Length: 75
Image 1 (tube, rainbow, N blue to C red):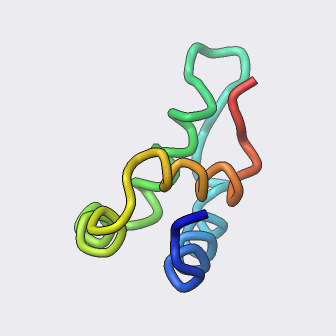
Image 2: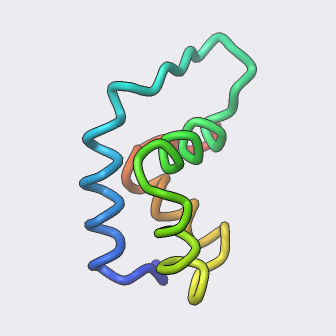
């Protein structure tokens, strides 16, 4: 994983605080990826993501961390 430990731990803590707030039904058309990214955006300000993650990561790198944090991977 290319994300720094510091950024990973920050995301993990923020996401775990908000995970129960996200409504996700497995029988709907939303994908696991959509769940992960919706959860990211309600947990961490977009400015923080742009300022701290995008200078050295792309969406694939961020999604790898989100998969690890949430345990949700595409089937």
